[in-house]
Amino acid sequence: MAEDNKKKKTMKLPIIISITLSIVIIILILFFTVDAKTLGQLSRVKIKYEFFLIAIGLNILYWFLWGARMKVVANAIDKNVKISLWESTKIVIANLFLAGITPSAAGGEPVRAYLLYKDGMTFGSATAAVLGERFIDAIFILIMIPIGLFIFKDIKDLGFISVGLTVGVVVFVLLIILFIYIIIRPNKVKSFLFFLSKKFTRFSKSKYSENKGIKRINSFVDDFHSSMYSLSSGNKKSLVLASILTVLFWSTGFLIPSFILLGLGLPPFFIESYAAQGLLLIIIMLPLTPGSAGIAEVGIYGLYGVLIGTSSGILIGVFVILYRFISFHMGLIAGAIFQYRIFKSVASFSMDMIKTHEEKPEYK
Image 1 (cartoon, rainbow, N blue to C red):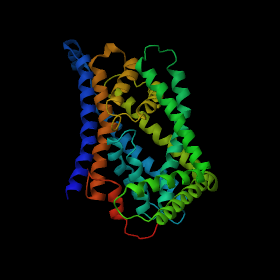
Image 2: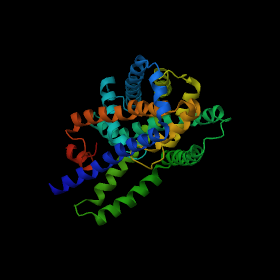
Image 3: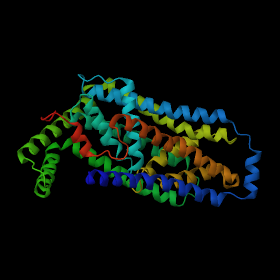
Image 4: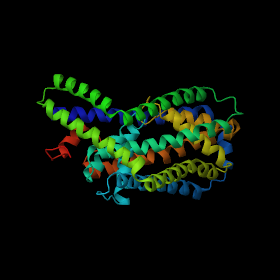
């Protein structure tokens, strides 16, 4: 009981950090952009609330398009498992909560993989589906980087944003290289996992058979490798459809800030905003804070401050609040609700919970 309470406290900490950082940075942005003049400016702005509703609708559509892609990828990897659009969308929404309180959205992947496993996939295949999605995302982002840099090439005052982009691109490329290495060198992956398993067995208090561990690792890596091969080579139509859905769901998300700008009576900057979103992905990918809280707000302020102009004053701060609420806090709230409905808990999801739910004695 004491151990469960400790785990819940451990999970509550990143929740508090994520939300607090986000709110504090937004308050600071408002503090430095709001004065009597800008308040008067806001009173003269004709707010168009219908555009805010469209932005919220786009965010919900983004979830469903992501769910559609997950369905396509999962069904392509394991043809015996048929996951409905609603089921895959529920998985996506449930993953938003842990993704929002872990650095670089790292917590979302285990949730999606585990729920796919609960729907009948093996752990290796479920992991391949989740990482396969991320690899498709990586290709899209790689294409977006030069486009974004080209559109922002004449802007000299990006400052710290340029540093974040440089670091982000380097880390991003290294992760892609590592991912490709994992796919083409499964035996090396097995050796590394065997090494970790032996260390775990040595320091673990629970009884854990080394032979059983080796068997599970072999099954997992073999399933993962064959699943990635099936996705990349076995079903070209599914891969093409997943790629199209990737462009659609990211593009849907990229439209959200433009409609918020329209709601504030500002130009939408459709092309520039699309490019800015691609560059922002690189920055918030860095695993520095839970949910990239603080970093995302500063990045949004830096990129859109250039587009909107500092003369817009308070509108920049209001834009950051609205955009971050729709794209981040809205997902955090919906994710918490769906995660609670699935796991009957919000703050205590862990690998131990997976083991508790896993009743099958043999590795599936």
